[in-house]
Image 1 (cartoon, rainbow, N blue to C red):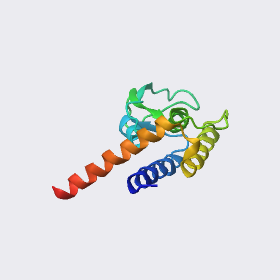
Image 2: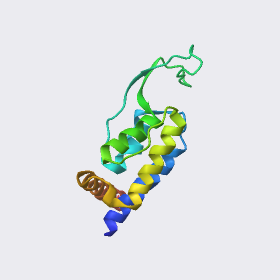
Image 3: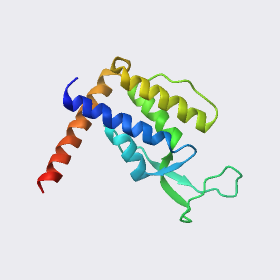
Length: 139
């Protein structure tokens, strides 16, 4: 495993571990991109309408009626699908998030379980992040 590949995998592992903390949470477009960028993906967000009148509805803390983003469990499912990682489907959001994050972490420990094209996207994302970090240090 090359250093850039190891760095890319470490960034992905960190993103998944961070995502695990957002059980039953909505992430803004910026948050979604922060979670998916290490995997070489961005721009997955879409508009959500607040529905605080429903017992399990979505409420935005700033009072907004519509925001672009995704629920944490949706991000985890999309990452699994994007990488070709199998996961156990569940009805509950929290359980689905845990199942997908566990499957992602397992796949990151065993890269042969990840689709070859997805591995290349991760390497590219890791290389881009490495270049960006070096550029910041020289400025």
